[in-house]
Length: 336
Image 1 (cartoon, rainbow, N blue to C red):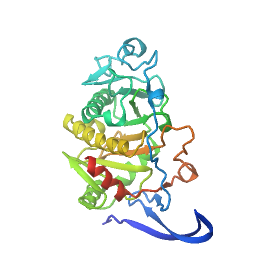
Image 2 (image 1 turned 135 degrees about the vertical axis):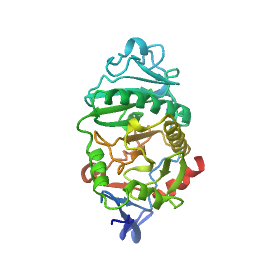
Image 3 (image 1 turned 30 degrees about the horizontal axis):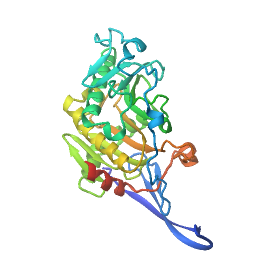
Image 4 (image 1 turned 180 degrees about the vertical axis):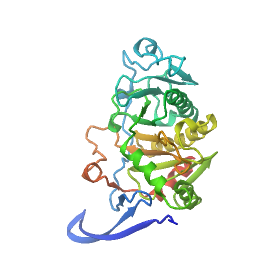
């Protein structure tokens, strides 16, 4: 029976001192191994890459003459869903609205707006209510798509250009097809192959009340991953929920509240951009897989600010971060 092992390797590098390059100093480096996938992640010391001040994003986020996602334009600028998926046309839940995606990212896809009544919502304005409403609306659309046939589904978000977003109005996107994504398929297959108790239940039990633990809302457990894949990464696992269609309204509210706390933490850290992804369990969901949310911060809106993606991430599929998951968990706990 497999047990979860948190394996890490301690390395010592000898590098020139920044302020005195003639002096060689020893710097510790930690390489951690993800217990499920075997992917390695590097946690470095001596460099703080996060900004010390928050940039002024008012010019970027000012309301433009035309935005297809604002309330006064959305009816004429977006389409409606096929009646075989939903008879609602556009799906609305609270402040959130879900419309068809004009970009063909998958066989079925949608775009969700946290709020159409204002063009921009900053990180600390993405409240638990707004995020929860958005998730509830996405669940309704996903159920409509799965009414056609079961498939892989995910809900994903970019926020501002450094995250890959081409539109400033805060939004998320869903993807549904018979293929899924590389990471989604790997997570599902490795979860099914895990020996013994279901991996995600065992992982939550192992992390509960530990240094990476953030907290629980309903059946949603929030914690930071042992081997992060991005900066300030936070995970949420929904116990007993194998796919997006299994999320209840209460689950969406609990996820929304926790996600809002994470985004509030990013705001307090002078950050401006993020990605998140919620991966469903595929066309044949199993209770050995639990719905997984992953959130990461991205580079700030600054023309001269470095990208947080290096060759380690792009070419080696290996993250290199400078704030350990235990420290991130402590930061988010203050906002949780």
